[in-house]
Image (cartoon, rainbow, N blue to C red; front, side, top):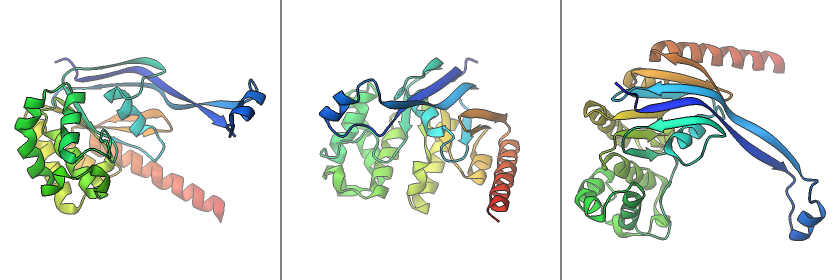
Length: 253
């Protein structure tokens, strides 16, 4: 079976500027003398995720997890390498992603659908399920700028999972919701997997990755350290983390 997600030797570089000019005059005077540095967020990542499987991605903060998800979602382009996906892709990557603050929840649902290439009619048919799953009730017709963080997450996830995705990308933003909603999300993700969808979840939770995932990967400072059985990957990651923390504490003492 052809993989749903192919990440072929990709790297991602951001260019950082130190002490950026605070005015046009300063920019002109410093033309050609600005201090810039290349920062490689990801280096030489290759990964195949089989269709219909649940893949978990872990790693310390700043390891490149969210950047990799944005590359797969097509939000960023890799500096080098190729990414291929097969199937309709839906993503929940950050709080309020894809939402316009001045539009109502309902209007944002239609907007998100349009970005996924779905018709207004299709989204109208899915609207009741989206509202019910999110649990935000009449707030669906209020501007999302007045939403709490929990309401943002609930509506965002409700849209992401109710547009019949063949690939679903979820960052750890789901952890913002309350325990009841988190359980509801996990149950829905399992239903999607059973229907044949491919899921990629970024999480720091070892228990969650062990419980849900068929395969897991560990990113460390922009490089893929290990891919394989979720328990084996998480054991090695936790052991490495513990050793690193011990080294830091010893240095401080």
